[in-house]
Image (spheres, rainbow, N blue to C red):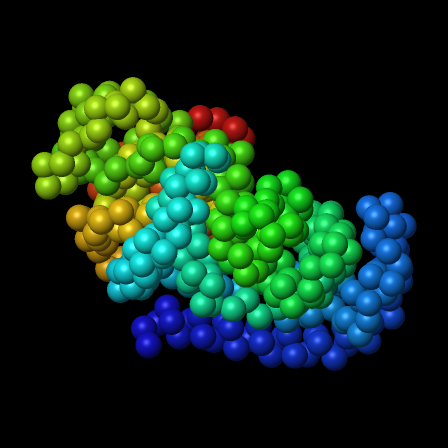
Length: 422
Ligand code: CA
């Protein structure tokens, strides 16, 4: 165990003890008002067409699940989110080459097995088959990974105590409507956030983009591969999927270019990147048909790992799940299913900075006048970009990666005046 792992373990232990201490006192408090909260949902549920017996049965014996992350327990500090990949996992671990290779092998088998369905989806909905398989693989390992929670309990807890109550309240009402359609409760086994089925749909998405693609008269996202894949395809199409275009390209960054070019604000035509000296590894070429497409530079580990030029479909995948690493995982898995392999440039074994270090650095850079979208402790494109710009201006070696050294340098810089540009 290195010091970081030990720190994380100690942190989890502290949180667990705090949770246990909380559970006793909050359970009693929560149980009384939880009943009132549920009753307060009835008018809305009735208006949405949920019959009373369905409503009663849905909540019979349901208590809030205080072990879920992202809850705001009244009168207490927010329970920290658990399992955030960017906190617990560096890119090398998240983009585990062995698990990607395994999922790709299985993906190719499924590609053959579901060929007719996938061709029909491409034709009628307009989303590429490998991307759909990759999402299915990433979300539930093609259905092998079971999500353990009961969606009604999860959504009710989040609507009652979560930090995003309104959003989850709408999802809860939608989940009740799904039950009212006669969908078995067991089909709504979900993640901690209430997503269910082979491709992890939120209940409102079921009504927006769910489709009965196998023609048996019901939308079955838990068991029907055609229904689940076509529904996911509709969701991706709605978010702007471009049929036949890659999600992006891995590239080699020319010596004269900086990692501080990263991010959507630096978006330009692929042909312009090419003119600046950006190339694909191993002498591969960009597809001529993509040269007019807009692309932005993405370097998830700063200078310590591979670089990518992200096209529109990368952003579409991020709209499905807002994370660079998630989109990269899906993109690389899709490429592997199509016959591709691992990233050409290896990920260096850099330490994954703690959320607090990142948040402190974001706070300091914002105070110094560097535009920060959010102070959230997450290492997104803009955070890396601003670190790179700061490193350049401070005369540091430029790697676009948060470290205690960069934070120290930022803290040593004087804050000029509120809102002053650096
Ligand atoms: Ca069906």
